[in-house]
Length: 276
Image (cartoon, rainbow, N blue to C red; front, side, top):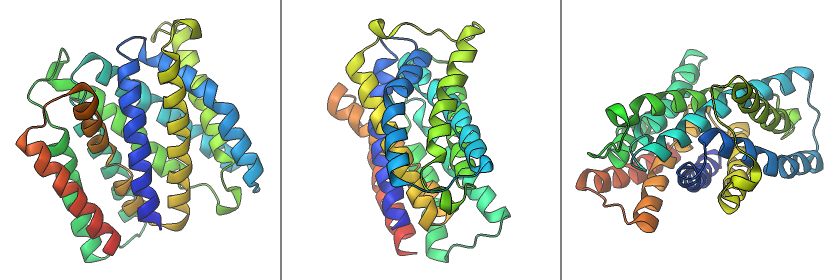
């Protein structure tokens, strides 16, 4: 079940990231993240409170720390996708988002099966191949720097939110979403990021991005509750493949042979992880 929910997370994140990248072509990336958080905060709060649970101060603090990491990841991902080729930033983001939790899981004692490890080993190059484009847009090195920072943020989110107690259920997502908004707003007030009013935003994209991100956060936390950090993190980091496919379908971006190979490898890797 954990692997299934991780794969569902990739699907939700992948579609949301595509929308966020499209929105970042029309408005500042930080503004997309901020307003997506604002419109989705009531939803995630209502779902978490109705679902119930008992969260300690530590759980809520961990949620806030995860939200901070996630905010940095989203801003840099959307900024990269908005400034360059829609698939240029995805390889580094997906690879780092998957690798960091695996390292932490191994250090803390997780020991997946041999077949699952083969899936993990296949997933990382699959992400890179499926997302790798020759045309980097107007970003240096194809936006690798944006992708690395985004991947570290996303990987950090999974690592930190996994530390919350099972009894807290979905309640840490409330402080996580609140922290995401606060971080973006504070950095914007310091003049480092630009934020515009909601009236200047592509509202449909903001709504879609916010709701898909909330849904992905819920399925990710549910997956971590029942599954291995290493395997769930990898299966939920395959969203670049979804983003690339969306770019192909919507924007008619050409899929190169290596990207097709990468997509096939991704499916094989996910199957290996699930069977392992």
